[in-house]
Structure formats: C-alpha cells, structure tokens
Amino acid sequence: MAQPRKCKKLPVCIVEPHNEVLPFIHRAIASRRLPFNNVPILHFDSHPDLLLPINLKADIVFQPQKLYESLSIENWLLPLAYAKHVNHVIWVKPPWAQQIQSSEQNFSIGKCSQSGNVRLSCKENYFLTDGLFQTVGKLTNTTDVKLTVVELLPEKWSQFDPGYCDTTNTSGGTIPIPSQTDWIPTLLDQLMDQPYILDIDLDFFSTANPFKDMLKPEEEQALTRLYHYSSPSDSTNDGILSFTKTRQKQLEKLERVFSSLESKWSDCEKVPSLKELEAMTLTELVGMNPININWCDENVQDLRLLTHAVILEGKSRDMTFTNLHDYGCTLDDTELPHHISTPEQLEVLHDEFSLLMERLPRPAIVTIARSSDDDYCPKNQVDQCQTKVLSVLEHLYGSLDITSEYS
Image (cartoon, rainbow, N blue to C red; front, top):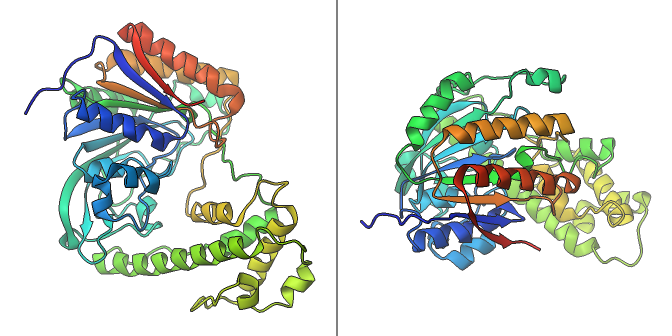
C-alpha cells in the first residue's frame, strides 16, 4: 500500500459545525495525506461526538453525500471507524466533561444483521441510552475500535474552578487511566511514528449548554419525565438487548410525537389556551394516533404544558418541537456540559494544551470546529480560542495550509 505523502505545510481545516470536518478527512484520505485505514484521531472536545444516527444504514457510510446529509455534530466520528479509516479514538476532555469517564476500552462496530443499521458492542451507558448496542455475534463487517478517554487537567485547576469535583470512576470492563502522569507517556507511544488526525473543537476551552435556558424549570421537569428511563439492572447481553429494545421504541415514539406536533402547531394562526389544550384528547393534541404510547395522566399533562409553551413563546425563546426532542434525548444520566470559562481559566487551558502538543509528534492533518453558530462555544470567546490554537500550531509546525470553510 502506498505511503501517505507528507506536506511541507501542515493542512488545517476550520469549520463551524463539527460534522463538516468529515468531507475534509475523506479528501485527505483520497489525496493520500492520510492512510486509508487504521488512523488514530486525537479529539479535543467538551463532547465525545461518538453517537450514531439510530437509523443509519451501514451501506450509507460508503455513499459520502448521503452520509453527510445523515449526520450531525454528535455523531460524525464513528462512521469513520465503521469504514475502517479510524481504529483508535482518543477523546481528550476538559475537567468539566463527564459523559464518559476516563478509561480505556475496546469494542466492535459493524452492520447489524437484523436491521442493516450501524451498531456497536460497547456497554458504556453513553451508547446504551441511545439504543446503539448489539452483540458481536449479530454484527457483520466488524471493525475493532479502541476508545481512550483522558482528562486534560491543568495543575491546581481547583484554584481556578472552585466548583471542580474529581468524579473519576469507570464502567465495568474498562481500564482506569487515573492521571496525566500515566496517560501522556502512553499517548506518546501510541501516536509515535504514525500519521494521525488532530481534531479540536474550540468548545474544549469554554462551552455552553444551548438548551440550558430554553425551558422554565417546570417545563424542563416535564420534558425530563417524558424521556425518563430505568437504567438496565442486568448487564448480561440479554439484559442489555432488552433495555436497548425498550429504549429504541421509547425514543422512536417520542420522535414521532414531537414531529407531529411540529407539523400541527408550527404555523397555527390562533394560539389555544392551556385550558383549551387540556380539553383535547391526546390524538387531537398530537395530530396523529399515538399508538401504544401508554402514558400516564401526568405525562399527557406534561405534553400539554410543553405544547402550550412552544405555541405561546416558541419564537421568543427560539424553541421548536424539534429541538425539544433533541433536548429530551440529552436528558440521560449526565447533563450536557456547561462551563463558560473565565479569562484565567482560558489561559491555563491554552497553556496546558500547548504543553501537551509540544510533547506529541506532528499530526498528518488538523481539523478545527468553531461550534459557535449553535452556541456550544460562546461567540464572544471563539475567535480568541481559534487564534490561540493556530498560534500554537504555527509555533510548533511552521506555516499552515489553512482551509476555512465557514462564513
């Protein structure tokens, strides 16, 4: 197999939404800046971005344009693993990110022989709550993936963030990685003498939960009740599959309900009162027959409350039924991170990032996501973060070949 070609200037692509780095990575593979398979990706981000669209057909992964249309910011990375381009994901997270604890684990990703969708064998709760688990025996065209999760923790971070709490723990079957003293030498060994992707989301340095102020407290409680689930008590394959089936059905029904609400009420001319909504049956409210919903009276009332909020104040609060569903899907055992960094925190995080990069080998390509249009990286901080990251790269690697694909 031909060796990847080396570029005098380090290729850097800057985009807004993170999933838009994927075409750049594909082009880098096609132009032999990256090998075709077994590439590690070093992923700095406040979010794992390791989900999959629940109905992503495996065959779509090899149809680039259809794939791009199927993906969003939280699920762009693992299709690279299914296509065998990436075999090791190293998620470097800031101190406030808790969606997956620091650990190292291996799993398989493949095509589900029953549904034809992409599924994986990892029992990490992050994947289970989205209904993505499948046993290895029911996966075809599998690829082995290593997932390493590490926390970049500046020295004496607690002095800069008094609310910081070290909650390091691991899920069953994972290997704990307790400190930077341990994981940085290991990372050096894993990345040495091979091309890798350096991927940076600028919300690594400061991030917001864009849903945080969308709902009033009683509305958020109502949404939480609708999307509530009971964690699996049986960790055997059969137990996890049973949970996965139940969770998939729940999310599919909720998606249909909120999609129907969007169609029925998004352009309504007369705004009904909450009392008028309460007089409607569930079918009249939703605009479809909500088959097998089996909601208690409290859940139906929760839906009425949320419907009234969107109809009455949706535009003023930038709230739709679609993003209500998106928000509901995030209401699992960990909240979306929300940490607007102070100037002092930004400085120590950039310094720590720079110190780490000084120890690592030169990447083959760099991808950078601004994540400011969707408010994950604060708009008043994103340019500063971008300038500092580019300054570090220029200092270490010289002139950069920058492609800016954002307006």
